[in-house]
Length: 153
Image 1 (cartoon, rainbow, N blue to C red):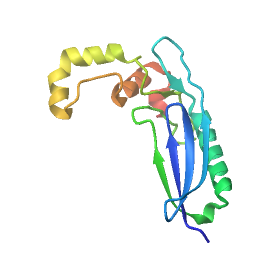
Image 2 (cartoon, rainbow, N blue to C red; image 1 turned 120 degrees about the vertical axis):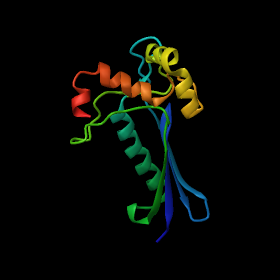
Image 3 (tube, one colour; image 1 turned 135 degrees about the vertical axis):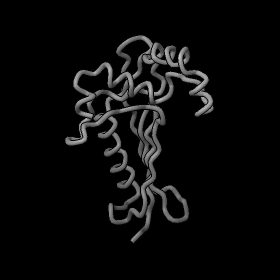
Image 4 (cartoon, helix red, strand yellow; image 1 turned 60 degrees about the vertical axis):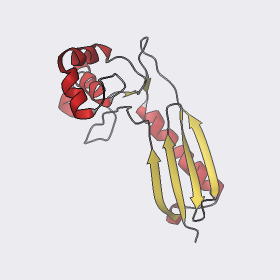
């Protein structure tokens, strides 16, 4: 029975899966793009359900291309979009809103408020300047702007 590792790279424009053997040789590969959603200028979202279905699809196709089954997988590695945020219902596992993508600038007004009031504190603790890129203001925006999310998250 072959022993393989499945790598899942969930990126900004699509999802890829690669199956490698113990020597690091690529046995199977699949890729699938997903939609970019732009509800307003400067806003970027992804549909988490679409990404999930694409992930299932590329893993299945990469494993089929490699000629392996679930019992052959000894490890799975996952990479993702880093600062992209999605909130899931803890009971159902369903997303409560689209994923807010790392490129999205919708939290710029919140970030300005943080810069005005807490710039030195934030920088002294994190070594970073507040920016809409980071996850925290995206979560803040979701909690304040998606009806019912705070109660369900």
